[in-house]
Image (tube, rainbow, N blue to C red; front, side, top):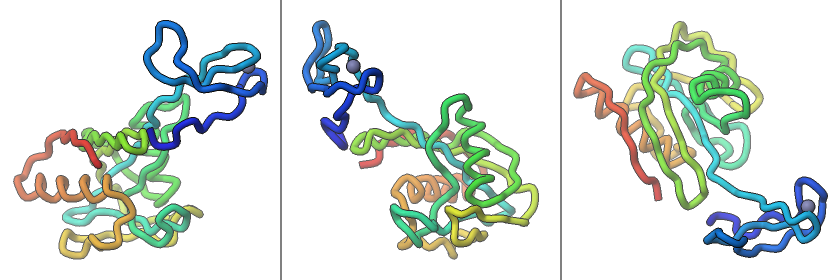
Length: 181
Ligand SMILES: [Zn+2]
């Protein structure tokens, strides 16, 4: 687990928690020492898009840590109350101010080491007017040969872009599942 024993206080009563294996369970959980609430910790979903304009793909340069200054596809943590598609569109609007039409689900990437699942959709850009938000230094379009491969922010972005251009050359897009170490 990425950050073991990271919960210190009960989210209901504020009491101290203790990590222990509850009865009928098989792994350590944060259990409140006062009200005995068990706090379950589960993977977080990151949703994003591969926005395409002809043979170009939209990348954003990060204006925030981690990986400040490096390039990424628009993506971020899914919010409560939205679907994976809603979240992917929202992140693309927030980070790039891009207008898109969502296409198929493209990559499903387990990042077990950090307790995350990353989902990327293909998307069609409706125009090339971008209005990057505060999390983005600049947004731009890149052909395959122009992708800043050594300045990409995340391995899931690299994995998604590699598969995207591979499928593009083949002329058909599949859905790709992979484990990212
Ligand atoms: Zn409690």
